Amino acid sequence: MAPSALAPTGTPSRSLLRELAAEVARHAPFAQMAPEHVAQFVAAATQVYHAPGELVLGPQGGTAGTLWLLRQGSILGAGGASSGSTEPFEFGAGDMFPVGAVLAGRAVTSTYTAHGDSFSLALPADEVQRLASAKQISTQLSAAPTRPRCAIWPGRSASSRVTCSARACMRASSPS
Image (cartoon, rainbow, N blue to C red):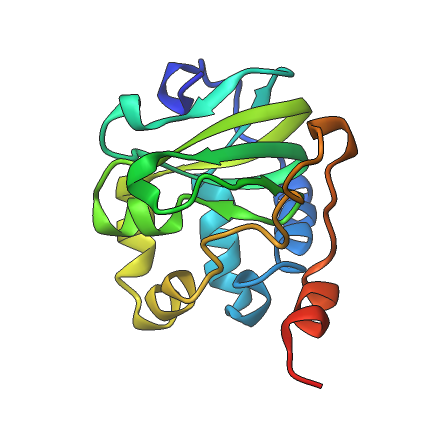
């Protein structure tokens, strides 16, 4: 469900917003941002629930209108022919997508589907552009990873997919 289709239920308390900002600040690129910029992101975002198997985003949706920050659960992605990769991939808590499509004002080339109950913070693209107008935020958002921490291993079923932390992936990919 698109964030704009959600009915507002009121303004969260300041303490809830502070706790959410602290949670978000544990993940890149927010860990490098000034606390007031993280607070602006959180205040402008809407929490969205994704049911298991729910299509979150796909190329058929046109221009990417929302930046998603996954708080809990997982999102499975599958690249289309135009993305250059058909390898499935998975986003976990702290991953943000589709950064490139939102910043470039284009459609995504992959399909994103919720795997299990998942919760995301959704930030409308116009808010992303407003927040990105500050040079520091723009630089950090554009440097955010555009792919998840680890891809699903080829030849494995979704139930035996493999994920790992960013630190483990960096160790695995860095030269010894």
